[in-house]
Amino acid sequence: MMTKRVKEILSHYPGENAGVLTNLARLLMSGRLGGTGKLVILPVDQGFEHGPARSFAVNPPAYDPAYHFQLALDAGCNAYAAPLGFLEAAAAEFAGAIPLILKLNNHDVLHDEKDPVSAQTASVKDALRLGCAAIGYTIYPGSSGSQIMYQQVRELALEAKSHGLAVVMWSYPRGSDLSKEGETAIDVVAYAAQIAAQLGAHVIKVKAPSAHIELAEAKKAYLAAKVPIETLAERIRHVVQSSFNGKRIVIFSGGATVGDEQLLAEVKGIHEGGGFGSIVGRNSFQRPHDKAVELLGKIMSIYAS
Ligand code: FBP
Image (tube, rainbow, N blue to C red; front, side, top):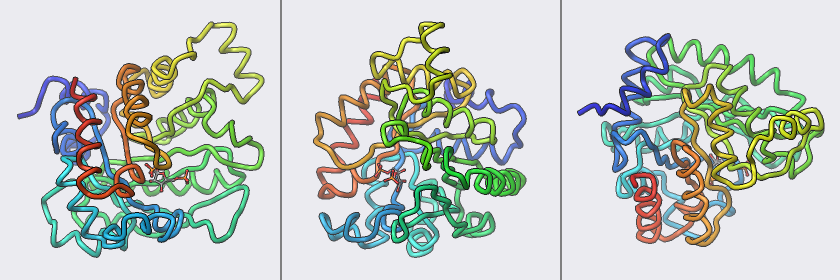
């Protein structure tokens, strides 16, 4: 049964066709958090993005593509996101079991460039063939190659929407003019979320922001308007506000594996600040299966509260 909150969220996308709205509803109505307006998604593209050993050696069953479908299902995630190979390997076996997001571009770390650009590694046609609810795409605002990515995602998003697929954008500031600290600075993360929203993303994924302000001109604006950014909840609120005043779904990434307490404290901050949920990769599949299901269950309980 469609809930009031999900209807309200869908009403924020009045320009979209019935197919896109249906697929957004699939993401919002599936899993343990279905109907709450909150999402917890399992993303497993780290094999490509970081390499197999860095990703899976700590929990060897995770080398198997089917493992992640089953983990997402067992934990009651809203959706599972992965590159072409992982989805092709088990999408038929799990057909209809959980909404899928096909990552259409990927990047590896075999060539360490300061201004990364991901390669397109799958198509909208692949997403349709695999029964996906959405396409996923990573942009690197701040990279000298950002124009290429913005233009590519414009075309792919248009094509995806024309076929009724939802568009999820990973927006990760990165590039030679940004400091490491700047990649998660509040002004930069809020800017990255805004860029994804302006590029037509339905769901935006960013990293949890720190209180650092990277850009001098932005700093003046934050200070003049006294934008509250001291606590994580305040910063999340600002990122949500920067994503069309809460009219775009913004979720936050889990990051490198940390202890349960640290992760749960961060999730509480995201929830308190009005974030729409989490996308938790390494902190899920780098734990043994049952521990991961337990931790994801605790994360979902926070969002359901
Ligand atoms: P994690 O929860 O493992 O951080 O996954 C979220 C994610 O966006 C993945 O989809 C992606 O592979 C990874 O983060 C990118 O991490 P990095 O910042 O190291 O490139």
